Length: 363
Ligand code: IPM
Ligand code: MN
Image (cartoon, rainbow, N blue to C red):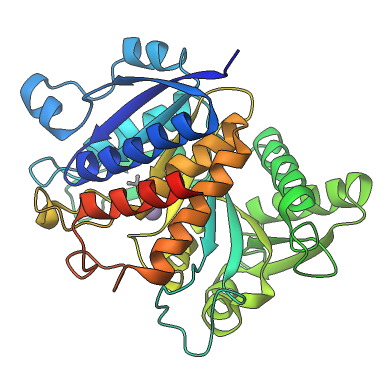
């Protein structure tokens, strides 16, 4: 019997619905082509619903989402809603409640895609960031005292416990073992690099560093271990991106370096990610936001959403379909699109989805 997957689709705000429609188009084409089934259920959580009902992501919805095999998300963020409400109430709530403790963000330059980094191409820009996704400054621990007075104090704590660090490292080492440069035939060893700040954050990154070397030594002696401070990581991502293989880091640094990563791989239009709970329900989303100024114009690039759907299929075990979608995307970037930027692709949003789907059909 054909494998069948129940997928929750949350198009969300702004250009989210436009790019999600193209990801769904490609997903359906892949299902027909490679003989599996997808059953899609749409949810309207986002800014419009919040404005209408005051509801972000209710607990009952979290319980419902738990029953799906995966979630495909468009974008969350609305110009009429104060910053933080939808992000915390929907995106971070889903990540935390569903315990999606890994945020997997490949930084991969596809053929034909322009990078702002001179003299670097697809061979040099090809690494992955494993961002921890539940701890750090994201837990909401902190507060104000004397708010609004000249003596106001604000504290927001970066928090990690050993359990969170260990489970993230485990995933990262396993990822490096299976998908590192040696595993992909692109180098003589698989490397996991810890990105931290042990010279200043002498508590949390000390914990990370000790846990990293303990696990590496005991369980992954064949994986090379590197350490880089986060500031130096930013420098090398621009100067020598080819030095990186798999990077593991905390939530906050991971957030920051993956925006830089998105830029060197050609922009937000092509940067995909997955919020992964290896034991539960994962949620896949383009890294770019809701891009309100492009909403409804059919000019936004759907490739990041399409690549997120590809990552979803790979995580579900449909590796062949995932690989073929990636090949189709590469064909389209190499041969069709003029640019990755909104409005400059030479095609509309839905035409780009058609190009990928057609190429997939031919594969
Ligand atoms: C991301 C975003 C989110 C984050 C925001 C929208 C809460 O920037 O997915 O990288 O900080 O994680
Ligand atoms: Mn971010």
